[in-house]
Length: 501
Image (cartoon, rainbow, N blue to C red; front, side, top):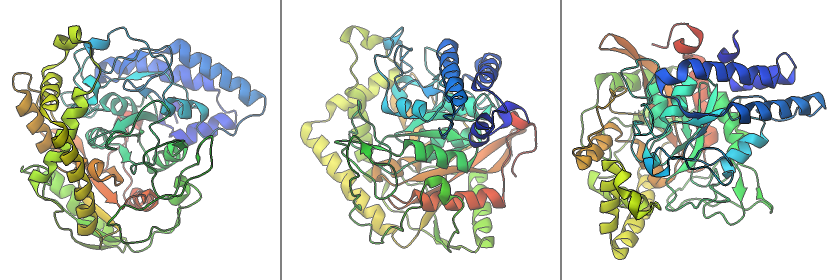
């Protein structure tokens, strides 16, 4: 196999066996980035000097007998919403052009400690706000399955880098679906972990708890190992997920708490999330929901077919599948929209640079400034009430199955509307009518590339999404690994073989 065909786990294993050096892996990834990134819009900055220095340092550690790093030698870029000291940090915005990071974010530090090599900063839309990656400071991120179409957002560059075979894994983040949306558009695995599973610290705040760091990968096991690396806590974290994960840095482990309304007891987590992928999967009760939740919209037949095929597969595997109720009314999502716009308004942009912002960002900031303090408190209360409501509605199910998106990967420019940013935002909600429910409630969810469909003469990936109770990533990963084994997917842009059907 070529180096770029290897998973993250197999890359690290080959490096540990000294079959290939970290420098060789890094040079291969950098060469593919130079060759492919422009076509798919994966990177906004490549960092070869930084990457090769990391690679040489890791090779020296391996030569000295230190080979216990879980992701040693694995090339893993960082999304340009996260800082890596001394490297560009522009957040997809012209207002930060030329800005350099002053520190390493926690997630970047943990990945470096695990032995990864940071080859560059991946493309993201302005401050990660839209669900497509079409920034003004870089070409759009495109799914390598069809270069006319978007890689999704906001981790679109990360997804394009993995799906095109530049790297086996890439760091991303998810505040309303921003890992799962590009996973669906690019035929990848994308997990949004439970609220409090991955600390935002030590330099970022959790805010309302919608966003979390995570990874884009091609396999469930790579996702699980990455979660083992990232599932850690910092002292003083606002949210701490139940079960699993390492102690916070510099202190003793803190006991987890269950969300109000979660009436079932969580099973004891495995020794690691990777171990969960090999654990026996009990008979699960799976609830199926194809009705959009946060917006009234039509669902493409390919997305419905993907769910139907997954239902059949779940039945063959012995799971019980029933219809799940719609847990909320469309209007209840307004609390998320209010908090999202306030978050946009709170981004520190110098007044003299406000005009450089994209129309959508300016509109969101205007909307956020209109929210009063009383209205903000009401939105936070509404989100917490909704968390209880969803927990109660779905309490009878171990897992909830929905489409990831209501449509196949969107064409470049199909959702973006600079002339009507309110219409742009509404179109995004219709495209993603399930993902943000999990951000609002803090529950974990994973998008899997279990289906493809011929759309306009081109085979495209169609993701399905599985969600679980707060803190129960182990069940999600065990079931995802079982589905992957029963109906393995392929990555034609990486290995040239046929795709899933």
